[in-house]
Image (cartoon, rainbow, N blue to C red; front, top):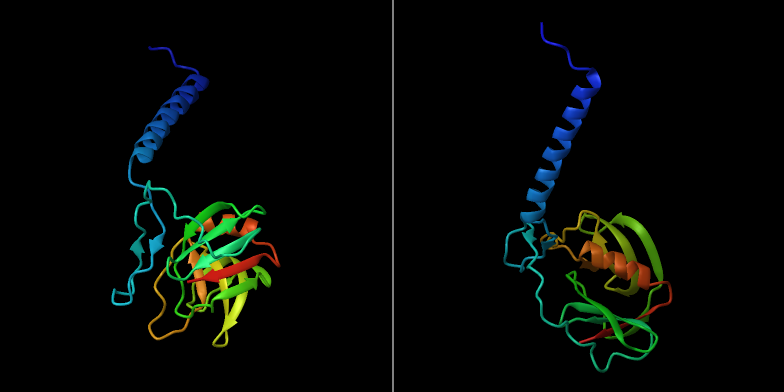
Length: 186
């Protein structure tokens, strides 16, 4: 009759086998495609979310010249982009954004209030909300979708949220304290 192996040998063998299997799967997964936040399609596109374009390796656009001085958030309506400028006026970060259907007027504003999370006017749960202007009866704010997506606005609905990718929304949230200037340029 063959000798029985002690239970600790079985447990050790199974643990080592499971560790090897999980490590192999993790390496394979890391080499595969990675999910990205959805980009807002053009108005003529369908209402489904589309993957965001792959990030480019080119230098980010320079901070607009006529955008004020000192520590501030700069939002370009035409470039659909924001910049974070430090106290010396140097850009420390820049992010592409998806504007809503209602844009703020040109000029200088300030972060008037912040909210951890709520539901956007389009029904999407959002977080890291920085309110800075009002127009057409709507509060205009920067935010990111909790799930990282940026779906298109509901047909015929006015929205004033300016959405960022989730990681960019987190950086903006850390930077944009109340009273931080927000300069809106063309």
